[in-house]
Amino acid sequence: MVDKDGFETLAKEVYVKALAEDAYPVSPSAGRLFYIITYLIVKSRGKVNVVEVGTGYGFSTLWFAKAIADSGCRGCVYTFEISEERAKVAIGFIRRAGLGKYVKVVVGDVRDYISKLGIDEVDILFIDAKKEEYLEYLNAVRPYLRDGALIIAHNVIAPKPHELSDYLKTILEGSWVTVITQVDYGGLGITLYKSERTNNVVG
Image (tube, rainbow, N blue to C red; front, side, top):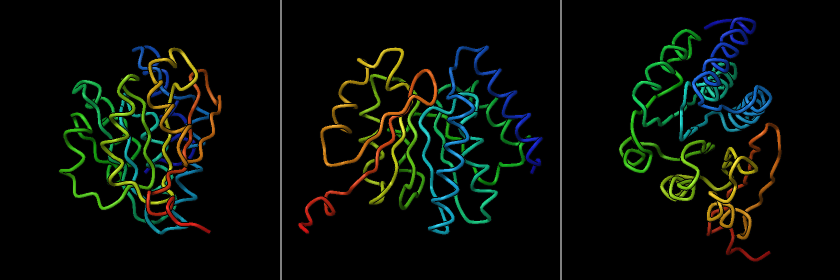
């Protein structure tokens, strides 16, 4: 596995590549936020499962995987990409970072493959794919979300938040807790997932 400086250099290379190919990844600050969130969760639980919808060229994937590796705990990033070309490039970057053992790249739609991977529960769901399908992605993964899981969605502020209207209504009007933060141009929606069983408990 590359050291901290080597990782930062590689992450910058991936970021520049993604921008050049109009893949529009999250910002470097958002990547570091993903690292912090993942590290805290995996250290507190001893393991973590991350599901990423939309690998792109692997920028966010690297930050999630790096946090797992640095924690010394168990975990995996299951990342879904419908473009075989992008997936191949992402796999190359992941291998260069020495993080292959922490990542499973699935070429295909999460709606078709999530049930075939043997995942028991998901701690973090990150969505950054077709905006108008965000709610469908959430619904596909929802049966696997543990109580207290985090759902993170990119581009909830820009460029076309109306394409996410059904998704935003779901996360904002229910009993879940959501914060919208503009850590980059597109913005992130970070939601604390509460299971229906928890929601029905009266204190």
